[in-house]
Length: 217
Image 1 (cartoon, rainbow, N blue to C red):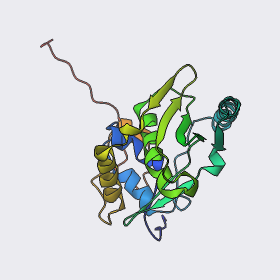
Image 2: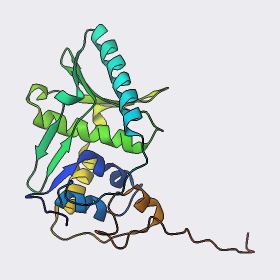
Image 3: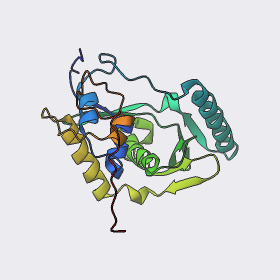
Image 4: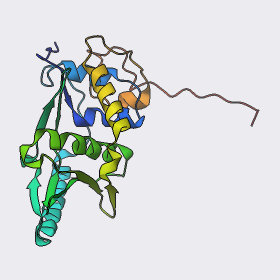
């Protein structure tokens, strides 16, 4: 049986698809926010985690060395973990790389898959949270960068504006509420969710997409 957390806790990547509108069912993120991750059954993933880890680690090392050659100070993923505590929930995350140079900062995440707006938003959440929680970065305004295999996407500090912070804060407050949001079951979103039917009987991952025919077009 899923065990309740002592207080709501949210990992950054639980927010990204909801923030960009790729997903509309907030219940899955709400469930994870309120329950210990090792206390409920999960659907096994087909993702080759070992291969990804090797590739990702190699890319992080390459980019770190390049930045250090340029004279920048670089902090690795293991040094960048944070927990930002608010009145309703704690927000956790771990950027791949944080680089500083002459009072300027940049937060970098390295992606080995297909480009997605969720990656950009993930970095924007880091840009918002890191200066608030990691003492060595207080007062630094961060730009962001998402690095893919063949191109990069730069994110200016100005992207983390009042509207973004308001949307982020509103979502966190909804997920930390004791009242669960309505489930919106559909094959696409449920296919990305690792919560089993034991905890979510409405799970629709195996449902067949409905089709019909018309002579109108």
